[in-house]
Image 1: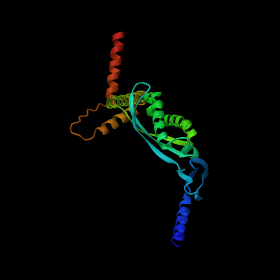
Image 2: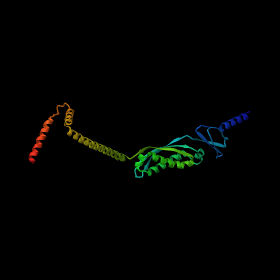
Image 3: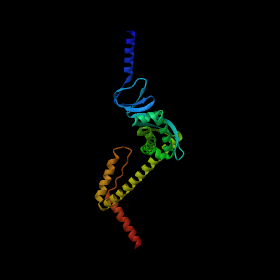
Image 4: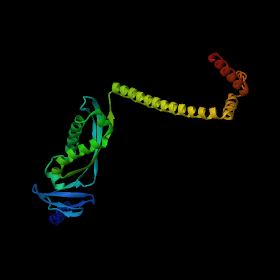
Length: 254
């Protein structure tokens, strides 16, 4: 009786040990006596106890941080840069059988590729063409990891840190550029205003009434401040002075 119960217990233990359940996002690499035999899908999978082994692999897209590291640009400027890698396993058997730790390998290869891409780019390209640099890095890493059964979906550059002295230089350069644009805009405005004033003067010269209206508008704009002193000359007086001046010049010529 004891032997029977012991046998039943052993059978139940072996039965439970032979059942492996995989989730929907998993695949299982089954080894028989250490040799690859098949790839199991999600659901219930039966194994031969003590003979077969199942290694589960997550098939979802995963993220991997590339730690911040120093890199030298093509124009010899040191930058600190980090990124994030999005990847997924396409062939679970290759990811298990062809490389020891595919996640660690992706991390190391991505770091190396990122330094190489930055080293072949100028500082301006690093700062302005992030997407281009990230795509170049992704292409380099994906080409190598394809043999591991891993697909690199994308790589995103995160922070790019520059030396403090270079930051100050770039800040001064940006400030000078903004001042230059402001001066150009102001000079163009002054030029346009001068043209408009010249045209207005021509119109007022032909129409004395317009000139008087403009003078009245200017006086009204001064406001009732006691510090402002306004002296008015009638336009007729100005015309009389001009006529006298013209007559005097004519007499001198005669």
